[in-house]
Length: 144
Image (cartoon, rainbow, N blue to C red):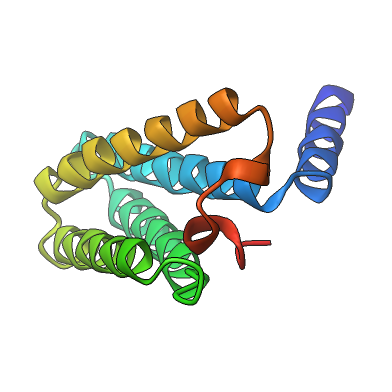
């Protein structure tokens, strides 16, 4: 129990001290974690009544996180880039909605793969920049 409290405190402090660009990475990780939990629930036996609730809860969580990323794009800092990311996030949300409605794991797997690529590119950019100073403003400016 104490270890869980320490881990929770550590995560909270990491979020409170993170730059906007680092928070984008945290949000990506949160969405990917929710999709992974939903994907695991898809593998549970159909007779497991809790499986549908787990799938629904986690896919909704992933959609909310992606929606937050989408709504915080700054079009004044990079209209073309922000527009592309807006459409990409919209596609992710629609596919996750489809997965939830149809209870089909394939759209989740697709979005997980696509978002992992974006997340990894973002993480690489952060490592190369050494800070959030060089982060594309349209992507990170309003994410805090």
